[in-house]
Amino acid sequence: MFTTRPEILGTFGVVASTHWLASATGMAILEKGGNAFDAGVATGFALQVVEPHLNGPGGEVPILLYDRKVGAMEVICGQGVSPAAATMDYYRSLGFDLVPGTGLLAATVPGAFDAWMLMLRDHGTMTLEEVLTPAIAMAENGYPVVPNITKTVDTVRELFATEWTTSAALYLKDGKAPQPGSIFRNVKMAEMYKRVLAEAKAAGGDRVKQIEAARATWYKGFVAEAIEKFCASTAAIDDSGRRNKGILTAEDMASWQANKEKPTTIDYGRYTVGVIPPWSQGPVLAQQLALLKGYDLDKTDPTGPDFLHLFIETMKLAMADREAFYADSAQVEVPMEALLSEPYNAERRKLIGDTASKEPLPGSVPGLTRWMDTEAHKRLGRAPEYAKFSIGEPTVRRDGNTAGDTCHFDIIDRWGNMVSATPSGGWLQSSPTIPELGFCLTNRMQMFWLNEQSAAALAPKRRPRTTLTANMALRDGEPYMAFGTPGGDQQPQWSALLFLHHAHHGMNLQESIDCPALHVDHLVNSFWPRAAKWNHVQVEGRIPAATVEELRRRGHEVTVGGDWSEGRLTAAAQTDGLVKAAANPRGMQGYAVGR
Image (cartoon, rainbow, N blue to C red; front, side, top):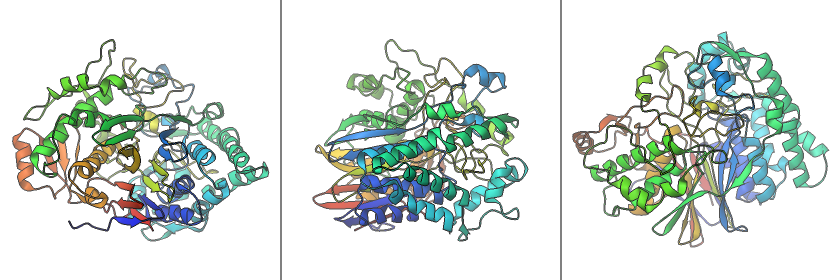
């Protein structure tokens, strides 16, 4: 089968990410003797610099890893919590019925830095200086601008020029966005990281002591102080069209740390698939696989109507359960065992017929009553009214519509260690730039509901139910594959397509990524204004016309998009002494490297 690029094969190590500079950074660390975890930290910091429209130091990251020394999959939660002052009453008092998608009131504690430090400390081998230096160099000396940075800044140029002037100072020169191919520098970000590194080195001691010193500098030192000062003194316009100050404090920063958890897993044939727990939407993939256990997919056509109809209908059911049940599992009971059980899924399969389901259908778990917004479709017209400020998602278009996106990477080293991570949040259009730090805060709190009946209701010091996830698979009990994608609500959807094409349709990693794809909009969007398009599916133009016609005959509302418009997947795998990797050609940024 023709592929847009080769599936990378080697024996030493592979890195696949959503930007070639980040992939090269990770590979350079492997070449210097670092392991997958060292390379992952360096790749994560590099992405903060070269994809500022998709993530930043003020954001978050879920990490799924397999350390050969541990012998099991582990999750590092880099999703920060809401501020102590974040109550529903407070947001309602400001006139909000939804948490805003932009501005300072949407900010959780920035979780990415501590997550990287925890992985580096416990699983890495290199010093903080070794893994941070490449990102500092790119921020200080400059890097070539990709077209989507220009498009994003152009979209919010008026907002920056008239309201978020600290962002204008960084991203607008003579009123213009950085141009594609030009060299862009973020000197303040470089200075911030150089100061973090200098204070860590001044603490003395071994690599572990310096990593701990860096964590303290970030969460209890000058970074936390600058964040509190900016939030308290800056009234930033947000989705409401009003100016509001932030409520994130240095105490909020100091009282939070990244932590380790077990992944949510499901056995599926010869595979054990691991995903991020239900403080993310990761278990959507696991729930879909639980439903698909009841079907024989090996002989299905990956672009035919039978396979795609089944994919769409099982995704609808899993997404409905996401809305009804997923939440911060440290504070809220999430019945994951029941949702993945065979009796539950046997009942859910009965809802799948020959025609499209038109309404959201969350399941029922004894003893639990959970609210789902079934009226979300009524907010479809709300975004254009606030188009000037409607930039809650990381990818924005001039028509006011959004298309979720962020960053992702997968790494396997010569020892067989694996990392899958999805850095996100703190993208340049989420909130104003904090001038002395060179970055802005995340807007992840928009994924809370201002409704006490919701599992994902806003509460102080709670994790929002994030879209971010990462995926891993064991095969015959052995660590096999790391994979994932950016894409907001599409992340588990595109990841599931890759896995199913690989597991059932005999495709290699690159074939699985290149295969014509789709996404389902029959869900409550995780981003402001939290709208839904019940029964809507968008497919790539390469899906056969006969398939589109048959899906429509079965009752699906289908929109045909561009030929290469769905997904930014990357993947890495290992077997029989080989390491493999692949990356998405869509968007012309992702790259896999290895040897």
